[in-house]
Image (cartoon, rainbow, N blue to C red; front, side, top):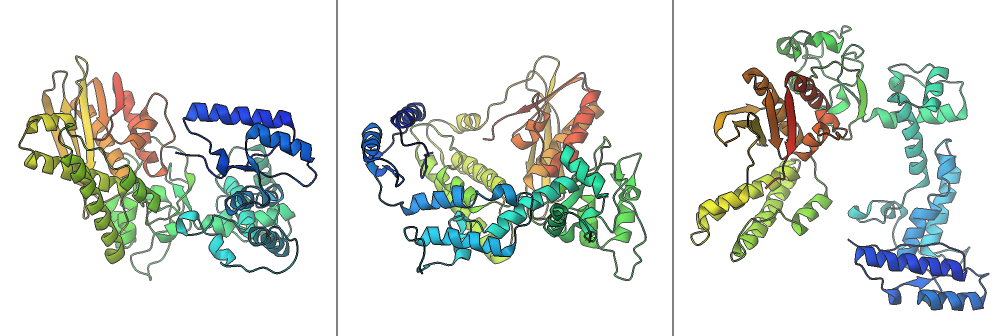
Length: 507
């Protein structure tokens, strides 16, 4: 890690220069990094006296800059020129002419900062510069996009019923109801409310209900199926009448499961599969509006994840004298990256980085056992790959895991006592889904099995950190894809005298 392209502002006084120098020295001491003062510089305003400038240069031991370099200009553009009008943009719709002028000022500062007027040569279009850095741009933002994003934030706060005095007043004044996102805009309202309603279309693209008590959700009108485009199910045939139907009618209230036959008779195959894959919470809770960025992509990995996999590969568990395993590990990483690339390019599939890491681990363990014929023996290699700790006397530990396949997933649970004796092993297949949902389903199945076995004291252990963190003593907010599953696990937790969830590192 390193700090780069940082711009510090202060008054041109000795006192401020001394304070900045002390902060730099303290930062270098704490972080272990060194500041390259020969590559750093000071930029003074035109009204700075020469005597003060010389004193500050001597204190900071840096040279005076006559002009701002490209890196500093990029920082200035992102942190100053494009953030100054944010306060106004967060409440009002700024006219397009003003947004165009703001963009023109940013472009002028980037390409020709020294002269206030005159033409300049733009070597790259502004649209290209406004793309993210990982896509070849500089991360600049258009004023119109900033304005729309800030207003969309207010629209989302209103639509999701966030607990705020300002939002409560706006919802009461303009009589906001459940279907507000899809209603027509009011003709006579304040400028602020008109600006908010104009960006409802942005929110509607990703707004979807997270199933709770299912009482207030209309099957045909409200977005509630997060796994399909548009978040609304399609009928089995286009000629079928779309009679008023609530989501609660599709579920058996006693067993808390979907009515599979009814769903398959009403909806088409894709919609039926998506609905049946939605987990139902055992504990009723209000329906919640969530944001789903891409309904078809819940386990997509970015290019940054691929780079991290290459620069920080899964740790190769091997003795110090067998460095060939480390080389083999890197070969598996490169092979998996190439395989994932072919799946995306030739088959249009989505990269699942966690499934790729698991596959690398399995390959490494298998090849290590086959090829390692010298000391240490295979048994010690297996022991180094995983160390299991027994539970206390009278307790049962259930280890869970999930395997991700192309056609289906598999989840498994192993129950052992305090001496490590295997009491029972369960395994079953499950529909294809992202690794996070599969791991959460395995934990839910484990606690259901423990309830059937009537074990009073249990420990559930696994390597899915995002699933175990919401179940820990200091719980965190779970991902929306597993929110209902975590709620069901918490509900079943009350049936045990003692129930502990333990996360272990993936090996």
